[in-house]
Amino acid sequence: MEMACFNGSLSPRLTCDRPRGRHAHCRAALRYLPQRAASFPGRLARGAAVGRGRRRLAAAAEPQTLQEQPARTEGSGAAEACSKLILVVGGTGGVGQLIVASLLSRNIKSRLLLRDPEKAASLFGKQDESVLQVYKADTRNTNDLDPQMFEGVTHVICCTGTTAFPSKRWDGDNTPERVDWDGIRNLVSALPQTIKRLVLVSSIGVTKYNELPWSVMNLFGVLKYKKMAEDFVRNSGIPFTIIRPGRLTDGPYTSYDLNTLLKATAGERRAVVIGQGDKLVGEVSRLVVAEACIQALDIESTEGQIYEINSVKGEGPGTDPEKWKVLFRSVQSN
Ligand SMILES: NC(=O)c1ccc[n+]([C@@H]2O[C@H](COP(=O)([O-])OP(=O)(O)OC[C@H]3O[C@@H](n4cnc5c(N)ncnc54)[C@H](OP(=O)(O)O)[C@@H]3O)[C@@H](O)[C@H]2O)c1
Image (cartoon, rainbow, N blue to C red; front, side, top):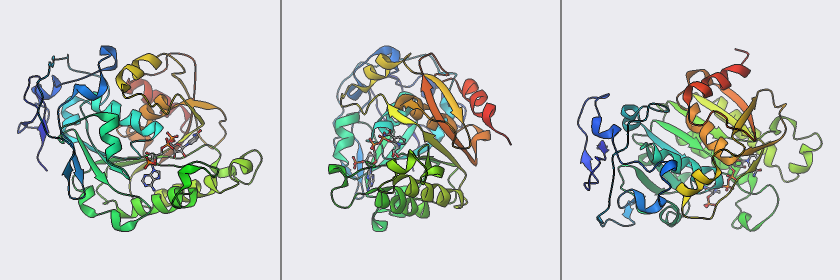
């Protein structure tokens, strides 16, 4: 796959052939950070590849004003950003859309597997395929999970899900059993063993689905199937991290201007409470879950670990990888 990065000008697709670590134009690449409160969809250029068949959603290069931003030092380094390709499964969901928005803001390439690729266009606008690629797939169908979808993928974040109780979202048999168990099993089975890290979003309470109050939540099996999926991931041989959120707050958002949204909610419920052993009970901002998933990809000590996560009012670690390292480490027994 061609390595392409943005420069800070009107040219949306400059092929980047520099050795790793020397992507100066990458570091200065187009960014639409939360602080800039810019319109999310309009910020990056232009066109998204939609597969299988990689139908283009749009390809017209429109004039735009892009300004160079100082290099980010926190989070994934820019050079590393250029070498990563993160597969996000469930990227149109509440947590997923925040993950994708955040990856775009860091100029990290991502590939989305979606049942409805058109949703990507409406959520993320027209993006160049060097930063955002979209493939059509339903994780329940093994035939949809074509090996070409995983070519070049270095990391995976899976945040698919459906409602715990019968709802419209179960239409077409999209139940917890099919999404949280069959879907994850199919996905993980299809992933190449070269994946550096798979982050799975699961749930608190999965180890206690027979106990009150969890048994109520589990009436239709959601916690049981999520636990089965966790176990499948743990036995897959792929380096993994499992994030078990408490009840999700903040979103899902219907606004298209995700960037403004990220800014608007910064500072609210961003202090992170993290645990292990499925003892934590509480709520967590989707923004915090999204950030935890992205941070876990690069923090070595999170490999093979399962974390429960809540958040409360306060500043929290933000996007600072050192603070996330300390947080994750603070609860680990090994
Ligand atoms: N809600 C809570 O309080 C809570 C608490 C703990 C854990 N969780 C878990 O946290 C995760 C994120 O939750 P969320 O509320 O942010 O998610 P969400 O809004 O429900 O989004 C779920 C995502 O999964 C995708 N999806 C559903 N069925 C699919 C299928 N068959 N094939 C491919 N993609 C499929 C959806 O895409 P479509 O647009 O195609 O439907 C959507 O992008 C989920 O695993 C959820 O179960 C939630």
